[in-house]
Structures are given as structure tokens and as C-alpha cells.
Image 1 (cartoon, rainbow, N blue to C red):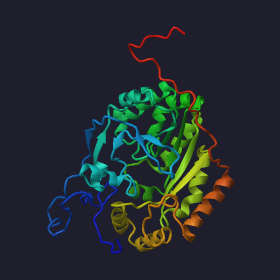
Image 2: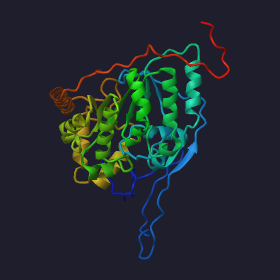
Image 3: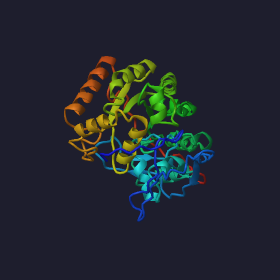
Image 4: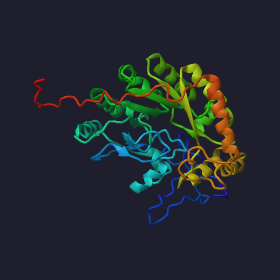
Length: 361
């Protein structure tokens, strides 16, 4: 998307539009006909969040990507109210016949049976334990988990089974479950990463409108560290020309809060996100828009996105290499260690199920 069109921002929302998904036969677009803002006319009512119960019959997702250090994951929710405009999970809403734009952050799907489905899966005779990733697609601690507590129920199952888990979140709500995570960490069964994108609260409010502030995320790192939970920081995504100048400051703030490991990911713009992010730039950073997009092309071999394994997370070319070098040098200077806390898969034992006959030995 080379041409950038002006749109109106929606308060508290990341996406600026709600275009139909790629699988729909008809395309829906929004056009300002000039009548909307006539004198005396009220604005449209706020866009409310709806939650639908997802009755999936399985809960563990599998992957074989060489770019990620896990082969299985759990996502208690589809869609995410945090509204991060850059979220690489947005295109998954198209599989539901919904828009990766505003629908993704307002039409959520919750999996209330997640814990029961997980327990059943872990009891299957052929199951082999490896680290379970939690929050790889959408945030397990997004606002609706405050009342639904699906993520806590999942953690209770993993603790009971002695199953290791790695968590990625940008929410301080994770501190609610610090008791479980601390007990699991004592057995080398849990570690967490907190995503920190910027220290600029103004930029965060526009880019991640319903996610906790940068300060609250640093508090989450501190709280987890104090509870004895190994915690790292994900400086993700790094966006050339927008927040990449903060890389060293983000790592410094995180280590000061108690993080012991770190990672970064270059901004990814697959499928519909390319247009959504370009729209966001036209609304919130019009003066920088073309520079940001040009730098992204420089780091992606002339394209805005390249899905090639081995390159999609870090990019290629001089600009991508420079970000990698800066990250490596800052990490070494600050004492971050890679794989400093390996999780233990040898403790996995399915506990007796109700009605099971007790062993004589």
C-alpha cells in the first residue's frame, strides 16, 4: 500500500478501519460522504466489545516453525481487546468471517472449557511433554481474563500435571497468578516474558490503546522477579523510524526492573496488517509514514513483509543487521543471558483422575 489515505481515529481503538477479511466474497469499505459531521449531528456511539463463547473441542495448537522455540501452545482467547495495531494475529479473524481490523479487537471469543480440554489432552497415553507456550497468538491476560480467569484455570492444570509453561504477555494482570507461577518456578516449570514496545506513554496509547502503560509493564517485570519467577523482556515489535531508537532504553529499563533475558522481533506485516498499519500511520504519524514504510522495505528486501523462515522475525539487509547488532551489544553490556533458565520436562505426571483406582505400589 504505497498511497496513504487520511482516516479518522477511533478513541480507544488501534485499527482505523474494519475492512472485510480476505475470504469474503463482498468487500466492505467506509466512505465519508460529507454528511456525518453536519452541525448538530451526533457522532456514532462508541464501539462496544462483545464476547462469544468458543466451544472448540481441542485446545493445544501445534506448529513446526523453525523460527519459534516451541511446538505447542494454548490461546484462551481469539481476538484481543488490547487493540495493538501491529498484532500479527489479526489476520486469523478472517477465518471466522470477521475483519482483522476493528472486529479483531471488539468481537472476542473466549474458551471457557480450556482447562478441561487441556487436562483431557495431557492424559492421553501418547502425549509427550514439551514446554507449553501460553499467549503466542493473543494475550492470555487481556482485560476479559480479569473476570473469566481462563488463563488461571489453565495454569492450575499445568501445575497439577507438572507441565512446564512459557508465557508472553504485555499485561500486569499476570501478577494475579504470581502465586501459581512462583510455585511452578521453584520446580523449574515456569518462566515469563513481558512485551515492552515503547517507554513513550503517548505513543503506547495510540499504538496499543487498551494495553497497560509502559510503567505498568515494568511493574509486572518487577513483581514477577520479586516472586521468584524468571522473567525476560520482549522488545517487540521494533518498528524502523518509529520506536527502534528506544531499543537500548527499553532493555536498560527492563534490566533495572528485574528482567534477566531479552529478545526482539522486527515488525511483521503479513496479509491484512500491511494495510491496517499503513492506515494507522496516516492517522497517528503522517509526517513519518513514508519514512517508516521505506525503512521497512529496506529491512525486508524491498517488500513490506517477507514470510521466509529465518528472516521473517529479524529481517535482512543493512538496517535489519544494525538493529540486531545494537540488540546484541546492549544485551551483552546489560548482562542478559540466553536460555539462562531451562524448563524441566521430566516432572510431568498426570495426577489421578476422579474415580481412578489407586495404585498398590
